[in-house]
Length: 556
Image (cartoon, rainbow, N blue to C red):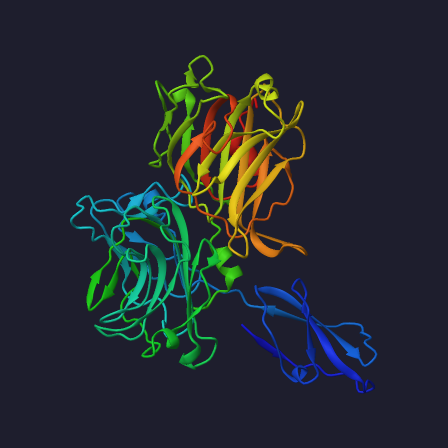
């Protein structure tokens, strides 16, 4: 939150005209003498901070810096539910609140059968809340605490990972009801076809509402997406400047919405019922039941900033990022004209092209002729606006690639988008015997123009040998440059367990793919001469050590 400081010159200095103020690690700003009497400083994270101030005189000379050290308290969870209770006891009907402070607010499950799913954001040694009734006519499963967890008249942040399986109706992830309406609801809007964060203007049967909507329509279903809603009172008691904002995968969706402007009848009010997981209340009745899985829910009595929301969106497993495997096509497990999908998630098998692609039992691979061969299936299998990792075990035939013209780019694997690919792994021929691996992502420039961000290998790509080629998109990794500004989202490329990334790796406003996921080539990417043994996709960004431990085949 903002703090105020006053700056004054040494009594011997009579010609000070201004000051340069900087929190170390953040950009400096210049202020005048009048503002120095009460200058606002807002740290963006907890821990130790150093405020540095330099004075400027009439000759435009700067003084030595004066420094002031202070600490910022950590924002503690008001409630946290990991839903791993079903791991130890599949018959459990209570999700424990593991927040470190206050009395725990455990949530009771109201489900048709087991309320736990092994498909969880934390991976195999985790569970998620399963809300997917066996009777499609009665999708009325939910979980709830006995009492309110938040004071919804004050600033708060709520967040969750959602795996939505049905987009035919509104689907609420979290809500805090009153008697008639909900003080907030974090949900999927079927009418808008977008994620949304809603604040009821009043607790009344018929009332206006304030909404912050996701920027992108038609978000993919059956993928893990991180959602957060922030209600901010601006640290004062004036309701006219209260705002709501939705975050999707750590990114703010548009500008904060001023509640009083969007709904003139708005007044902050307190929810009276317990926190609801998977449903909300409107016009006095519970409805909008969620279909799918919910995991890693956190609520706090504080308006987190963008950096805080990004940190909440990063799930850790024993200190490393949690990266559950959500798709795995394995040639060795396949027969006929299908490339079998063997992960526990419901990704679909791939179909081989009519010509140019064939399964080889002798080495468990998919042979590709480099002319017409490919495999294709339905995508996407991850929310590509968030972090993910993709890896292909590939062998490229050097003689066939050498016969292609300079500049030829063969597709190893990629997800189609409206134009081109939202992500893709490639091998490119630069000249005779000169090949590089590439990992690309489709993005939007500041003016909305579609662009492609691509990193390539520093050294020549190996041909005629099996290589585990891995691309990582870390949606939360910050970047900055004088030319491009600053943002979050970086690419990394690995050949085996070596990080071979070269070129500009920053990606801003990554685009979501839709349609076919292809291996070996398609209409917009050159065909690959060689073979594939596997294609795998994980939610989350792997580190170099993760790639070594989870991806690389020992003989690669």
